[in-house]
Amino acid sequence: MAKTIFHPETDQIELTTVLEALSDPIRRDIILGLFEDGEQNCSAFNGLSSKTNLTYHYVRLREAGLTRTRAMGTHRLITLRAHDIESRFPGLLAAILAAARAERAQRQIQDLSGTLSSAKQGDDEPHREDGA
Image (tube, rainbow, N blue to C red; front, side, top):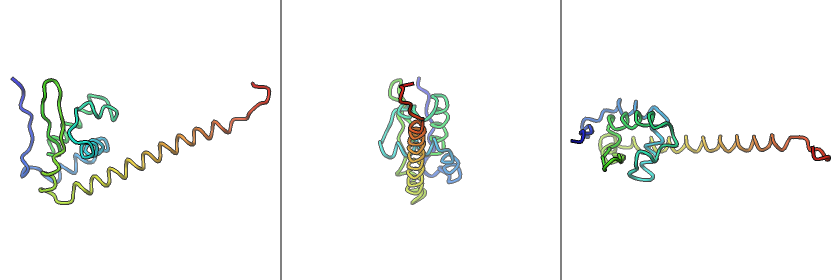
């Protein structure tokens, strides 16, 4: 017999719990991914952290009422409870998504800057005409 997965009812979702769950950047990335791509298999976010760590983050999001998890055979599919969050806390999800997008853009700029800096350092190496 399959274990029942706990999900709070919409009226049980508490602002403090939601904000606490969203305090972690990995969880904000998961929320953003679910919003942009819709329902996802848990493995869709493997690039964010280890499987064990992601499991912890999925539970935190689900118990806060931000996501819904459904079992499909051996897979777990995660959905953002956007309608529930919006009806409970109007405008909150839009603000969280905007902040998550800004954070992602900042990381991409930093990554690009680091890549360019590394490439530039490689170009600063003195070139010898004798091929050595």
